[in-house]
Image 1 (cartoon, rainbow, N blue to C red):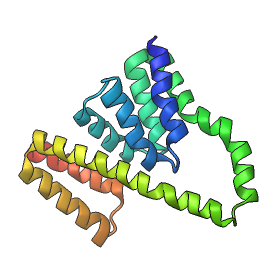
Image 2 (image 1 turned 120 degrees about the vertical axis):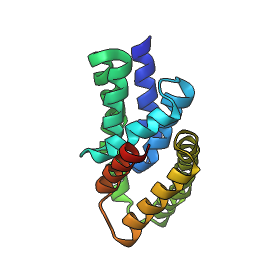
Image 3 (image 1 turned 135 degrees about the vertical axis):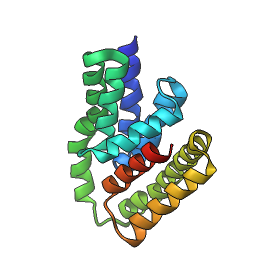
Image 4 (image 1 turned 180 degrees about the vertical axis):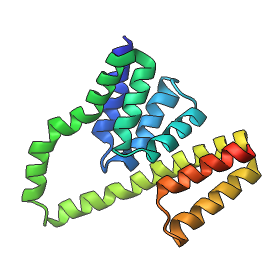
Length: 175
C-alpha cells in the first residue's frame, strides 16, 4: 500500500505541475506534508533547501529522497517514475499540438492564465516556510536571513546555491 501512496503522491503533482519545479513544489508539499504526513513543514523546507543546492530538477530529487525514506530503493524508483510519468505520457501528443497552435491567441492566454495560480501556490508555500522558520529560529534570525538573502539574490545577483550555502553556515554558527 505504501508504494501506491508514493506513486499517487508524486504522480498528481507531475500531472498538475505545469511549468516545472516552481509549480510542482507546493503540490508535492501538499501531498507529503498535509496529506500523508511523511514530513513536517520544517523538514520539507530543509529538504527543499538542500535539494536546491544540488544540480538537476528539484522534483525528481525530492521524489527520490522521499520515496527512499518511505519505501526504500523500490519506493525511490516508484517516486521517480511517478514524477516523470505524466510528462512521458503527455509530452509527445501535447507538445505536437502546442507547437502546431503556438501562435494562437487562445494558447498564449491559456499559458498566461496559469501563472497567477502558480504565484499563489508559491506564496502560500512561502508563508508556511516563513511561519515554520519563525517558530524554529525566531523572528530576528528569520528576518536577518531573509533580508540578506533578498539582497544577495536581487541586488548583487549571487547564485541561489551560494545563498543557500551561506544560510546553512549562518545557521550552523548562530543557531
